[in-house]
Structures are given as structure tokens and as C-alpha cells.
Image (cartoon, rainbow, N blue to C red; front, side, top):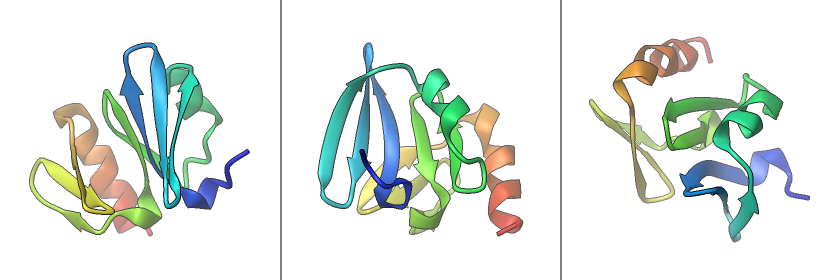
Length: 90
């Protein structure tokens, strides 16, 4: 079991989801959609069809990307407005 606050982001990898944490990564057999339904919306947001990120771990945001722990993550056009509104409510 991984504490939610330790999770940096979730990444879709074929039929698996990579969970990236401060201490490494874990691979689980699941879909981002099913994981997204279980996560607290005040802490996590979907930013791309392949990524869900921890809002507290975002270091920088550019036009179409964000940075978490030196990893550049794309922001999908369909998810950008939701991400920005979530950040401004923090």
C-alpha cells in the first residue's frame, strides 16, 4: 500500500499503470480510468489521456507541459482548462 501523498503521478503503460513515487515506481495491472474514480479529486487531476498527477507535486507549468520531479508531462488540450481551474482554487 502506497500513501497517496507519496505518489507523484500515474502513467498509462499499455495494459498497466505505472505509479511513480518519491522512492521509485510500481507497475499494476489496471486502467487510469478505474484509478481516477478512486482518487481524491482535491489531490489528483487527469492532465492527459495517459497521466494523472498529484497537484501538490507540480513544480512548473508551461503551455502544454508540466514538470514533476524533473519529469516533463504533457497536458492534453481536453484537460488543460480543468487543470488550470483546479490550480487556481488551491
